[in-house]
Length: 116
Image (cartoon, rainbow, N blue to C red):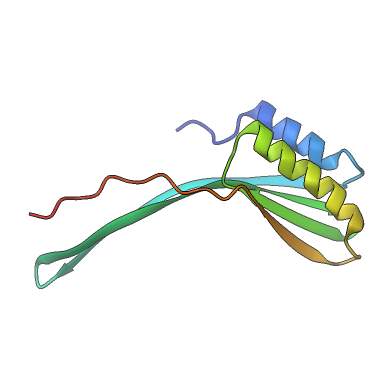
């Protein structure tokens, strides 16, 4: 499986997050698919599934911590998150935590099973 973020994308996002004096930055990226099948008395009752996809950036400066997440893992979207966080971490009170969500989008649809 290919990585969710290229090394160059990750490096550019971390650099942008640290650009205004951050001490530590990290990226968490995930793509997870799930499915379920419900049988009752040997009969198929329900089939379903879903997918989670996105990336988050956490930035720490002077014991201040901010976190932002985006469902869009493009370089442009993650640079926007990192830039916003690098400004926000300067505004936070010491020891505070705050989360920001960016670009909500629908998860990709998985094929549905057919009932017989």
